[in-house]
Amino acid sequence: MSENRFAHLLLAPAGLWLALLFAVPLGIVVAVSLGTTDPIYQAVYGWHPENYADVFDPLFTPVLLRSVGFALATVVLCLLIGYPIAYYIARFGGRWKTLLIALVVLPFLVNYLVRTYAWVAILSDEGLVNGIVTDAGLSENGVRFLNTPWAVIGGLVYGYLAFMILPLYAALDRMDPALIEAGKDLYGSRWQTFWHVTWPAAFQGVAAGCVLVFLPAVGDFISAQLLGGADTYMVGNLIQQQFLEAANWPFGAALTIVMMAFLLIWLSIYLRSAARASREATA
Amino acid sequence: MGEGAEFDVGPSANRGDLVSTEGWAERVPLARRRPRRRRGRDFDRPVFLRVFFIVFMFFTFAPIVIVALFSFNSTPSLQNFTGFSTQWYDEFFSNVGLRESLVASIEIALVTMVVATVLGTTLAFGLVRARSRLAQSSNVLMLIPLVTPEIVAGTSALLLFAQIGIDLSLLTIMIAHITFSISFVTVIVRARLSALNREVEEAALDLGATRMQTLRLIVLPALWPAIIASALLIFALSFDDFVISFFTTGESPTPLPVQIYSSIRFGVTPTINAIGTSMLVISFLILAVAVALPRLLGRREEENVLIGRETA
Image (cartoon, rainbow over all chains, first blue to last red; front, side, top):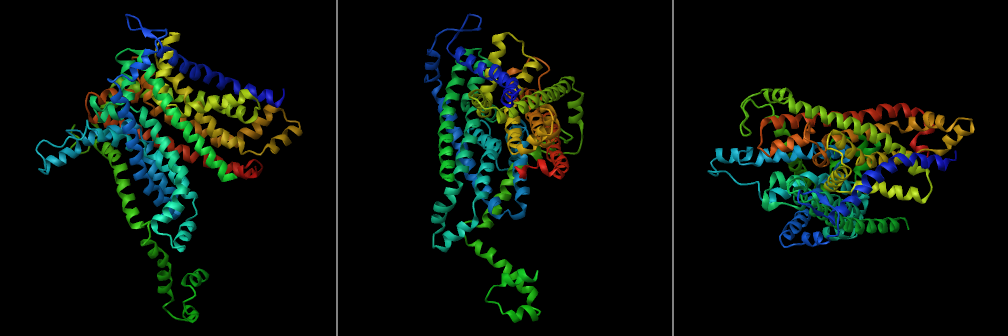
């Protein structure tokens, strides 16, 4: 058997698995999104593009906008928190670099659900912080933390920060610190040195981190479910409801497709810019 | 130390001082400190960054530590730690439903680990060695699951099982987990595989080894660290997964994360702390094995210089 024939034989099992159990189901989602439900709420195929019009119905647009808004706020906060952390480790970590980055990543290996639950236990009305607040006499009835937009965004930041720190660290660690010294020797101000030296070196890491945080944050429903309430629901909650509670699968499928398409647009923009950057780097 | 000290003190220092006087010892640390002090005025401001880092570490670790601490509380309070007890762990392990969930989660993770590692590794071989348009599209097909949001993975799996009429059970969770684990294995194993030295394999073939013998005696030994690392990663991911399980789970037993989710919706209890802490311990144990095992295997492999990554 030729080498190439043998290689194609190895390709077959997993290739078929992914084709049948990943690609085909995505096709089914598209098909169902154009279908409708029969009187007993079973999804039936059909041609009902109005499902997509429903996605942009004024009833649901606030949810879509909120998802994007929360995800963007999460990205910005992750960048503001993650950049100094990554920079500190890359530049001043010295021989502790590996240990420090391991310390940063360790909490993120704990189940996301458990970590979100931890914040519920701390911030809920009967939680630890409110216990301290009422014991200290700061407030009679405690402070309302949960069910606010910031609780949901905070949960998302806490959930996905590692996806920002790791690519940032990878980019900043590659940068030669002598470049910063050189910038200063040439009388560059702090800001100029940052803008002309550090930022271009960090940019690919920033872009990768933003995409890696944005993708899961848009589709998240755990944070809004546990830390928020009905008026902080995101598109993930809506999809989850359509599938598991409302039994309106065609509408849920249409929401899924719209979200996936939206994310793929951003992903392809990022991949294109990353490919261009690596071409320029090698040229 | 002598040479380094001479260099650090710089041209302004008196050479005679360096050799003869007793001030030598103090002067070296002083000189060493100089660049660090200069950095303090820089834009980087390590003092600010260090404080920021410490505060950050506090906020990332505190919630986890608090969950673990209150899982040992003697009263159901989440506000006051009144004393040490293991009653919430007793409650976890004596509850039949929760115990079944734990067993179900482990079963799912084990099956997913084995099947996904085998499929992902063969796919990695195929992708590195096959040259055709089919191989290119397989590569794309392998990469898309990595960027698919979990909720899309969950809904598409649910729709598939509904369409072909399979009742939701542990089996459907396993199938969905395997589908979204293959790519992780492939990416990790492929990185290792493409760093291998092909000439060693060709030499084995020239010496009369069959293709299977070459695979078993030459290629696989070099790949074990990557295969084991990805297998453990898959176990951890599958064991921790909530979203995909949530969409593909049957009535009972449900995997542990799904069980946690439904209990949280009825309010927070110390039993959830105990379950969460147990899951955390299992995750960290797997991580420790994942870090330690490839090193143990890797050391033996390094003796075999021919297969080393660096020779490629």
